[in-house]
Amino acid sequence: MLRMLNTVLIPLLAKAARSGAPALFAMAAVCIAHEQVSPNLVHVEINGLHSDKGQVMCALFSSAAGYPKDYGKAIARAKSEIAGGQAVCEFPGVSAGTYAVAVFHDENSNGKLDTKFMGIPREGVGASNNAKGHFGPPKFDAAAFRFSGGRFEIKIQVTYL
Image (cartoon, rainbow, N blue to C red; front, top):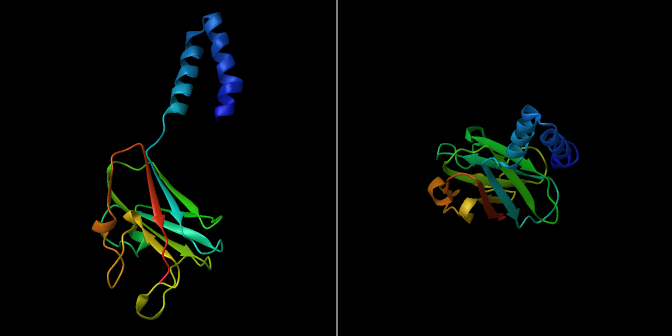
């Protein structure tokens, strides 16, 4: 999109200004202004993955309901490929509010968190604020963060139990 601005719209804008075509000039200015506005975005960097196999599954929750296990109750979900033991998930268009992120390393790419006896994860897990659970998963309140808009960056360290 930026290349299109530089190669097409900017020269058109200059020509419109010289020829006195105000409508075209205004349209090009609006396009440029729109390109520069960044949407609200929660950017999640995931580290500590012990292999590049599979994918990372991420979920953004706006309440404790379902957190962190029930991805169906998340307001947004994302998945990411892994490279060098790292992954990135992004959640665009997020409104201001309180949220928590849950992630897991889906090593076998089956789309679910595999567990051992008594629900202990077989795959790596993580939460915003690097929140840890005690005799179970972390609580929403421990992982919650306040998002007021713009770009918000979170780093999550995956742990394997």
